[in-house]
Image (cartoon, rainbow, N blue to C red; front, side, top):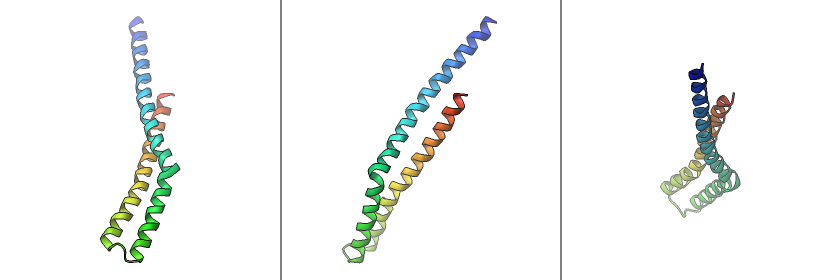
Length: 98
């Protein structure tokens, strides 16, 4: 009986440690999400608008246009990756807390 209780205790500590690791990772994702929502989205939209205007006026060539649009869209793709990662971690944390 004593051995069983000790194993349960060790298992509980392992779960708590795993939960803390997930919580730290979730905080990093949350910070990246907050950055995008507070300034990254506006930056991406401004970059797209400026790029389209520059291309329309002949200030940049098509290659530069594509690179700039790609950079702007990468900000959004990174945001979506961060949201997916954050959601995955929250699900894992909820599972550990059951």
